[in-house]
Image (cartoon, rainbow, N blue to C red; front, side, top):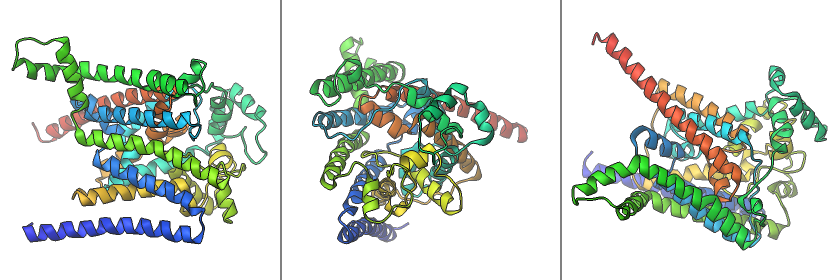
Length: 480
C-alpha cells in the first residue's frame, strides 16, 4: 500500500471513530431530551465507552495475563491487572468512606474457587476472558464475538436448567431453598441453579476484611486499612513477589550480571520495580481504568439519590417499560463495571420472546430481570465498551476484521460455555467476581481469583499438550 492509499485508509478509520462517538452522543442527547431518566442509562454508556478504550489501549485481558505468564513467562499483563486493582481499591475506599458505595459483597465459600477454576480453564480455551472478548470484538475479532455469544447463551440456558439435574441436588440444598419462602412465581425448589443459589450459596457468610476485623466497610479504618491494605495491597504484593521470583528475576539477574560482578537485595528491589514499570501502556490503562471504575460508583449512587430510587427497575417502571422486571421490580443494576450478566439478559429476553418460560427462576425472575436490551443500563455499558474499543483501535490503526477458523470457533464455543458456567456458579466473571470484589475487600474475590489462576494454569498445560500432539500427527502424516 503506497503512502497516499495508507493516508486515505487512516482517514476513513478516523472518520469511523468520530462517527461512533457521534452516534453515542446522539443517543445520549436525544434520549435525555425525551426523558431525563435516560441520563441514568447514559452514565452506564459513557463509563462503558471509557472502559473499552482503556482495555483496547492497554491490551488488557485477564486471559492474556495468565496465559502469557504460564506459557511464555511474560508478567506484563499480570502486573497491569494488579495495578488497576490497587488503584480501583483506593478510589473505592474513598467512596466507601463517604457512604456512597454501590458495592455489595458476595457469599464466601469453596464454591468461588471451583467457579473460578472452571472460568479460568474456559478463558484460556477461548483465547480471551469476558471483558477481553468484548474489547476484541470492538477490534473486529470474529472469534471474540463467538466467545461472547457462547458465554451469553450458556448462562441463559444454565440458569434455567432443571429436569434430570435435580437428581444431583443434595437434599439439604432443596430443603433450604424451599424454606426461604420465595414468591410463588419463583420455583426455588425446582432447578439445579435455583437450589444451588437459594439452598447453598445464600447460606454462606458474606465477609469483607473490614468485617473480619470488626470494622465497618464505610469507616476510614475499615475502607483503607482493612479492605485496601490487608485485602488488596498485601496479597497483591505477595502475588507479584511470587511472579517476580519465578518468572522475572532470572532474566533480570542475568542481564545485570553482564554489567556487574554481584547481585544484592537492593538489585532485587530494582528488578521488582522494573517488572512493575515494564509496560507504560498497560500501566496507564490500569491507572485510568481503576480511577473510572471507582468514579462510576459515585456517579451512579448520586443519580439514585437524585431520582429517589435504589434500582433502575423503578426508573423503567416510571417510564412505562415494566416488561422484564423481576418479581421485586428490579433489573440488573450493579452501579459499577460488570460483565456477563447483561449479556445473559440479551439471550434471556430473546428466548422469552420466542416463547420460553424463563422468568420463574431466581437468576432472571427474582434478581436481574430480562428488560428490553434497548432499555437495560448494563446493556448500554457493554455495547459502549465494544464501541470504545473500536474507536481506540481505529485511531491506532489496529482495527481489522478477523474471520474465525473452524478450529478457533470450536474452542471459542467450548471456552465460552465454560466461562458461562463458571460465571453463574461464582456470581460473576473475571471482572465482577475477581477484579471488583478484590478491590472492594470482598474475601470471595481472592478465592475466585485463586481458582481462576489454577484453571488458567491447567488450561495452558492442556493447550501445550494438544499442540504437541497435533504437530506430532502432522509430522507423521508427512512421513517425517
